Image (cartoon, rainbow, N blue to C red; front, side, top):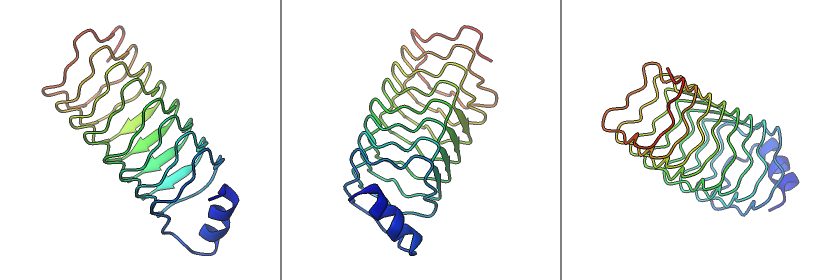
Length: 171
């Protein structure tokens, strides 16, 4: 599906795009709130500065997707594939990333408020300067993660693996 077709159909009121093939689609600055993209193929898609409030992205393929500066609120990404995704400066609030593979993902400068990262795999993730206020990282694997200058205020790190992580200047 072409990005322009998705936008046209979304503007006409359609919200269910489960399983849609949007690989490489340019959805820069798109407002796609209350959308169902469960199982959608969004690998290498451009979603920078996009707004995805109340979005269903369960099991969506977002590998290599550009989500720089994207705004996600109350979105469900459980089971999503986010390998090599770029989430620099993204804003996530009340997002479900439980057990999601975030190995090597760039979350530098991102804001993650009340985000569910229970048992998420964040090995080697770049979280420099990220704000993880009240994020639930219980049992998360943060081995080799870069948390330099990250704000972990009120974050739940119970059982999290922080071995070999860079915590220099972290709060």
